Image (cartoon, rainbow, N blue to C red; front, side):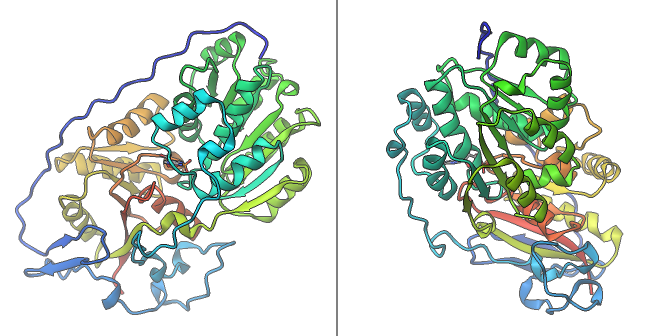
Length: 450
Ligand code: AMP
């Protein structure tokens, strides 16, 4: 970095508020959902309303959804929603004691990181490195390129931030570019960066679309050590002469497969192509598709591959289906589910922006503290929805996949797929919003009765 400095911005404090739940005269099915301990599940009691019933894995026949012939699932391609086997949505959480515990080869102290950074890790209560951190941090510190196949929730943000921060603090002329598929993820990475670098005089800017570009330009002009951005906005800033990629010695692609899915390939190539020949590249992706492989071959130099099995991320999530007979019954079942005492922080997924708005309104009318989250909303509104859920000011956020990508709220109790996801990959991404950091979570998918 070679320009003068700007003051560090303060981080916004969250305040915790209580929430009251709407209750409703109950005439029909009542049920309770046991905490995801692996012990009890749905209990149905009382008369059934309109024939609706919750059924748990046991009472469910092993066939394909919509009665078609079940093709074996190909994790690389995924299935269209009308082909997804309902069995994929039913899975008991692997309780922590049953999971083969990963024994890290290193402690954070072994990495010989800067004392200020080590202090901030302790402040954040990072005690042991996660598998991706254990394997990636020493390799990145050595300066090697990395292909990390790891899903969200495995701790990959720290796996690249810790060694890169270490590099930045030892060489303040160094600059780092991090590309992420969505504004939310980019902003979340910046929040993590700030928490790791407290008191270290390292400066960042989040260059994302939908936020005022003038402010981003001003911060760039003042000088930053790291840019965390979405490919479209970063390219725009390069074209305006505000970012000079030849000064960037490290680049991270976070959720590279998502960026490709979202059509950012040309922007990514453009940005990578403007970097110096000698540089460090860290590409993280949940899947290793042919497109990712091509990108790695083209832009990485003798990369070290690290694969963290995706099972790690959903092992803590108890998954089940909720059967409905008629569309009109869905909302009643959802209402009951949301009234359960353990439904404290709920993320509901829908396929379209309109359906998100509709359900948000319906739940608000029923007295729930529910907010929508989708790409047509202003950044401020989107951030407010996420913050409200994080701070218990809202009980429920209803989101589209793109808007919810990368959301990292520590204690989401439930993920509800009110609409069936279009691919299994999307499903895994959705349920990865709960059961994070070794906590247990619940995931329910609404499916029609056979
Ligand atoms: P990520 O996969 O990077 O989105 O991280 C998921 C969550 O795990 C975030 O809330 C991190 O702050 C947290 N986390 C990551 N690594 C560690 C660690 N070594 N110890 C404790 N928490 C961690």
